[in-house]
Length: 170
Ligand SMILES: [Mg+2]
Image 1: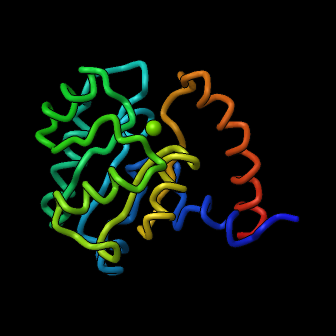
Image 2 (image 1 turned 45 degrees about the vertical axis):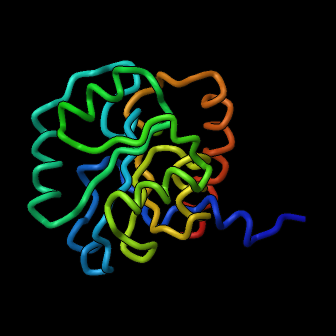
C-alpha cells in the first residue's frame, strides 16, 4: 500500500512551465528571501552553455527584488562554474541532491532559514524531493531540453507518473 505522506515528498509547492513564469511577489509575500536554483535544464539547457540576455535580466530582477541566490548543481564540470561565474552567482557543485547537505550549505551561504528559502529545479527526484525533505519551499519547472543523463531518463518516467497525479488532484 502506498504511503501517502511519502508520496507527498515528491510534490512541488508550485509547478510552472518555466522560471520566467514564477511569481516572485507571491514568494516574497510568503517570506521567501533565498533561492537555491538548479542549473541544468532549469536555467540553461543541459547541452548548452550560453547565458542569454533574458536569463541575465531575470537574475538582475531577482536581486532588485531583494532575493539572495545560490546555484546548486549536481554537475561537476567546469561548464557549470563558468556559467555561475558569468552570472556572478555563488555555486555549490557536486551537490548530490536529493541529499540535504548542499541545501543546508546553500542556506548557510545565503544566511536564510528553512522558512525563507525556496528550491527551484526541473527534477522531482533531486530538486523537489531534496528540497521537501530539507523542509524548504519547492518549485518545479518543465525541463528546458530532452538531453538527459541515462539515469535521469529513467527517473523522468517515474516523474511523469507523479506529475499526472498532481494534475489530477488540482
Ligand atoms: Mg536539472
